[in-house]
Figure 1 (cartoon, rainbow, N blue to C red):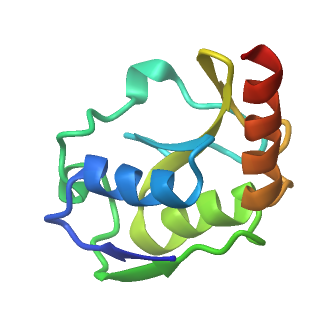
Figure 2 (tube, helix red, strand yellow):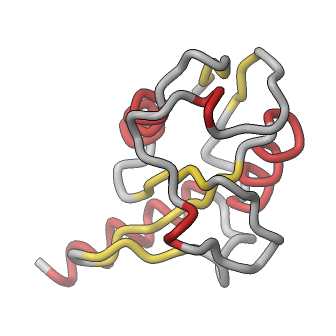
Length: 123
């Protein structure tokens, strides 16, 4: 999947694109990047109606290619390093969304499969 990044795009549009490919994962945007293996404060969550231009420190235009084999940490780092965006991946577990800080080394496919399995066992 390829996601276009520019200052005019709304956060919710990117979240929708990501969610179609990975229905048991959620991409959240934060006002500050977090360090690898640590979480982000909920106080820093950016509202989904904001534009990317309102949330980032590096205003490059381009696209990011997201593959199932990419690790969570690689994706989060790419958003931060190339586009100045603080993002965090969350995995669905029943009715709650869990930050993937401990499992950042897992691929997106593995995270999504784990979320699917957790949701089947809860249902």
